Each structure stands twice: as C-alpha cells, then as structure tokens.
Image (cartoon, rainbow, N blue to C red; front, side, top):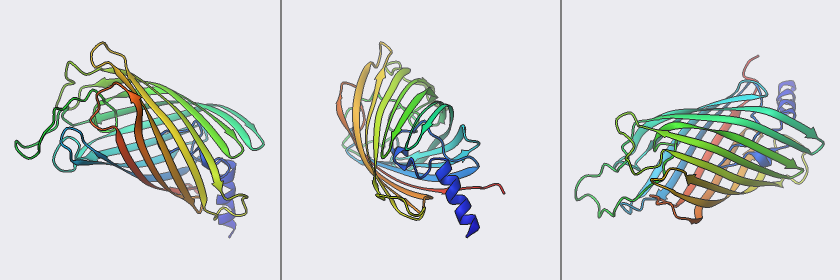
Length: 287
C-alpha cells in the first residue's frame, strides 16, 4: 500500500494526472514523462494508398525513458506495407526532448522544450509492386516523413500551456531529409520542410480526482501542417486530427484518432488515416 501511494504521488508531482489532457495523440507536449520511468508504446496507423487502392498499415513500436525531470528519450521502429506488397521492417529512429522552461501555478503551468529526431530508413521511394498485381495509379507523392518514408533529422521547439482542464500546445520544427540506406531521394522531391502544429486537449473525466485508479477520458483536436521549402517538390498541407484517449490506473493509455486533410496542394500518397495506440508506463524503475 505504501508503494502504491508513493507511485501515485510521483505521478501527481510529475504532472501525469494533473496534466493528463496534454498527452497529445499526434504530437508531443513540452512536458516530459516522470523521471526514472519507462514507457512501452505500440502505434498502428491504417490508411488507403492512392497509388494502388490498397489498404496500408504502419506499425511503430516505441520505448520511452524519463532520464530526469527535464530530459526524455525515445527509441522507435517502423514496419509497413506502404512501399511493398507485405509488411516489412523499414528502419528505426531516436527522439530526445529537453524541457528548458517551467512556469508553474496552481491548476496551471507553461512549459517550453526543444526536441530533435533522427531516422535511418531502408525503404524505396517508389512502391515495389509486382507487375500486374494491382491496377496501379500514377504514383504522384511529394510528401516525405521520418516515420518510415526517409532517413533524416528533425528539430524544433514546443510550447504548452495548461489552464485547469484545458491544455494548448504548439510546435514549430524543421526537417532535413537524407538518402535511404539503399535508395537516393529522387530529384523531384524536396529535401527540406517546415512542420507546425496546434493542439488542444480537454479533460472530461474524472470530474474530480479521488484516486489515481480513476479512468481518465480526454478529448483532443490537433491541426498538423507541413510546407516543403525547396523549389522542387514544393507544396503544403494542413490536416485536422480529432482524438479520444482513455487512461487506466494512471499507467496505461488507449488512443484513437482520425486524421484528414483540411487544405493543401502537396501531392500525397494518402491524406486520411486512423491511429490506434496502446501505451503502458512503469514508474520508479530504479529503487
């Protein structure tokens, strides 16, 4: 019983309960997971691929570590059937976030963090489909990402404001895309882009906290945009992604999200996707 109370206090002190509504589904907040904690996450994305008409899927296993109250680290893997006819391991990546500003008040706080991401991907830039296997459409795609599409690096700034049950967050970042392990970026693809987002989360349940075992229900809406900045492959888009999130026993969460394009002129292989994510956190991993 004593250990349970200690874990609950750690979660509360670290903002795990009080700021549950800033555990965004499609972006990261400026806040970090509690220090000395370990998270295991599996994300599944499902979408229709315009070039073949087939349903695509991408699996992203992830391990997260709260190194201390300011620094957290992620290690990710990527596997999908997006560029081949069956699910294949595409590569992996790392993510680090450092919180450099914290302004805390009762039932409110403002935080800022810097982040950096790197990926190494072994994928072709055009689909490897057997001749005659599909009624192929022209593959007109100028969107690259570090989540299985291409190798590269990304970095930026996050600012998050918590106001009682509402949390708002914005991100501004820059991506530099690099050649994949066995394939070079085609000449008509942009190697540079700027990404930006605006996220809002609202805590619906519980109305009042009585125990860390209570189930949390959070609602989110996120605006996710990107602009390719090179003369070739230029284009931009803005997506909207509503989501619902359940948190059980303050340790396990379930995310459900649908993402679709609001506006844009960038050629993309898919502009609609579903996301299902399960995450479990282990606190106080070092005695």
